[in-house]
Length: 593
Image (cartoon, rainbow, N blue to C red; front, side, top):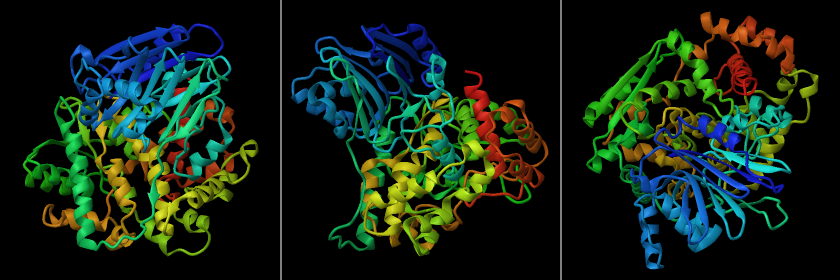
């Protein structure tokens, strides 16, 4: 797990090494163990390493194959690298390291751009092919690892974070009006390739980019994997499906526990998903370190789930660590968490993951986390609502997910930002394009490949890597996801969702964990806004920078400030927090760049 960066000049010039230095400095926290750089004519690479596999100098990057003229920078983990290594040795390749980085380098030498289809894991990497003068970029199937870039007639730059690109300079930081619409209607999800900044884009999940200097110098972006939610001729019963899912989940968890040269812990929230990881690890004979965080209660909502995480830790005799964070620390540390966000993220648990990761990183470098289970196995309350709704694809989706309808968005922003219903057009197009048997199959496929990527998955990567902590997400193992998409919808939505996971957990976990209502990672002070949190948000939204930016309509803003703890989205987020967070992110990351 690392931070990568690079620059390819398209105009015959030399890479800006000062810009590369700025990017590397921004990526230092993602990779605190080693720094490396490489240049070759129009190309320069930078790398910050978090040492997890092959802790020796043989694992340092950029990694070079001088015989074949290849250079590589890589962020992520390849869980099937031992199997690929064996195949490549049979084909005559020699290895000097024991990690996964060299496997990617040799795989590219053997199979070229098709190497990505053979990789199982999470990854973002760049290969510079010196003989062909070609730069090849790739991102994993489910977008677990980020890859941002900026492109103009002079050069292509890429990095693991937007902050690194901003630090390099010369980026168009004007707001993309289409992305702004997504930001405030689609739960802060801005699907690739866009970001809220016109000058920064991101490579979509399951895509590659290739750019050859001796060609037309136009990037070629291609999809290498597509998720199907169809089940032709399936005749399996519940028992058989449960056994198949259990086997695939166990394999995913085992991979993420075994492929590491350092200890692997678990973020234990007290919910079904993370508890199931701990329970299945125990069946593999593992007793991991576990970590739980809690916050102050509000009258309307509890701030911790210790009552559920404690019995799980006790049952499996884990080395358990609990952290309780007072509201004063949440507000004090909030600017740091926002500074670590590559894009503005409104989920309350972003701050929770940031503070938790700080504590966890003092004990381990790698953790497993339960992200993805709700999207893959139908755990959220809005899925049954969508399944039962009537109307068009969009009419069944929007009333249960959109933070604001288009009409409300038009009242939220000032005149220059009012335009078409960009989010409605996107969602209708995406749902229609899915290879799926039923409506809920379309929704889950869209969620898993698009919405989750730019909400919880991105959030976990940013907040953990801010402390040099690698988060592994077994529920997003692509083989498990492919299998789960064939699972009949009723085995997902029954009994409040995640029915098949509850079947697997029964008898393994405490019944109270299995049968509890769906829980979240609560930070109540960012939902029920009052007191010093209200003062904080009022100051941001009343600042000169916010007024001069001219995005928010004063009448709409005043309405929310008058009753700050009464305006919630359909997914139960604070609309005021959404607005304050977006402006604060711009002030912390763009205005200061």
